Image 1: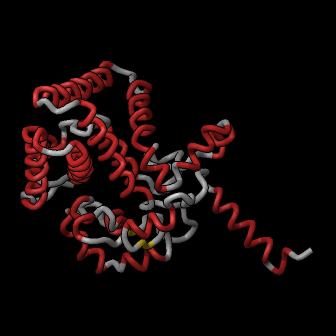
Image 2: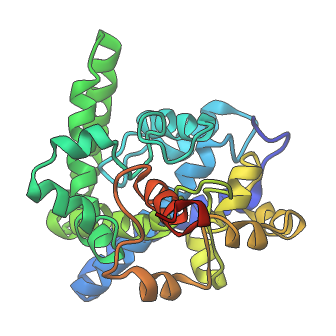
Image 3: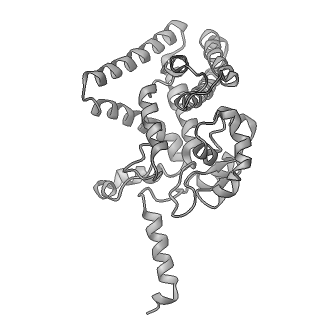
Amino acid sequence: MRPPSIEWPTLAVAGAIAAGFTILLTRHDSLPTAGVVIALAVLGAWYNSLQHEVVHGHPTPWRVVNLLVAITPLGLVDSFPSYRRTHVAHHANPDLTDPATDPESFYVSEATWARCGPVRRAVLHALRTLLGRLVLGPILRALRTMLDAVVRIRTTADVARLVAHLAGVGAVLAVVVRSGMPVWVYVVGVAWGGGALTLMRSFAEHREEMFGTRSAVVRTGWTWSLLFLNNNLHHTHHARPGLAWYSIPAAHRRLDSDARAAAGAGLYHGYRDVARRYLVRPIDHPVFGADRHRDAMISYSTSPSSDR
């Protein structure tokens, strides 16, 4: 669903991102390397938020224009067509978080878990902590994305899409080299740092629940909300996926999404709250259904009818 008119706030964000990358590429010599990496991480995460808006049909009524806003692989890892395909499938899935049907789920099935050795199980547990998601997540996600791109090749069209993405990545890196910025600085900043910020946003946004909503809410200040284009109000985004980012807060209040999230996947008071709870402690078990089965067993064992 595309908007009936041009959404200027979103185009302003696109302009700010383009200006930010231009400034860093042309002025990086006068800035400390650590500052450049941090700035690239912020811009990379912001660009991912912009791409998310475009997936949902924003910011213009014209599909080609929208595609031009988001098609450049500035983050290096994802091709926009692949991201659009998986995210549309994520929203169309009636059973969010189920790894059998939700391509964005971080859970694994019981069958997958049974095939895992001790090292892979340790990694899966680590990814359920915020620290593990930030440190390991961008690397493992990049490897999985590249592997999926190769495995999914079935037709010449699939080959063409992969070649187009690699060509786009090559063009981005060629501009970086021409600017004189070390490639490793760009890769670490955008791919790892930007990926980590995006994964911080998504860390707690979905959680398996038996009865309540599986979409959480992180209430935070305007800087984080602008960086994530209000996707931190995730219950509202899933309830009204066609809304432009700047219309989400008002809808959030109308839907009473704080209360709905608190009764389901969770209501958090900022990302510091998320870190306080789950920096090194897993948010839940990596196997889909594991906590549900555990809670059912606890309920059974403590009910009067279970006395022996």
